[in-house]
Length: 118
Length: 115
Image (cartoon, rainbow over the protein chains, first blue to last red):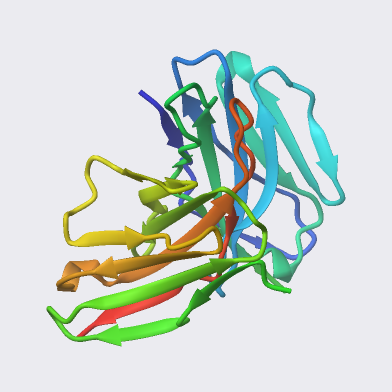
């Protein structure tokens, strides 16, 4: 069965601190996709990154970086030099590869609420 | 420049009174999804349309229905809302081909309150 675990319910940091959001997943499929979404207080889910199971390269985008490790089934997200605008709920999600008759179903973790204080 | 638009942003209805939430998209995506998100919880998929093909999640209550009259629009109908249906409803779209799992693009959501 597919499952995504975000063990950190809430994290509170002071501006400019680095923060890592953990994500651990379970799947029996060999081909799957992992996503991170940001949900600010306004409510919309904002896509941040997609990674497929065959690409274990870490990725950096500005202050954001992602560490994908298949050996530990983890896909962690780090924000460097956090800012108040980073305050949001962050969701990690898993989707198994679409096969005939299947569909792109996102399985979300419970989310991590990040509060960045001035 | 909103690409997935949900109306209204806030909806209040009475217990048992049917309500319809709407979603439109300018992305020309072939798949549209409806999610329910209760307070402090993850979004939960209710159903999705792959073009005109409707797909219901096994645990979606019969009280929830959906219509997709064309590529751009999708509606969520709640026939007899109960207090437990108060939630944020999120619409999303994606352009799918086999084994692509493209990112889903979400609207701002409609927050539904039940009196």
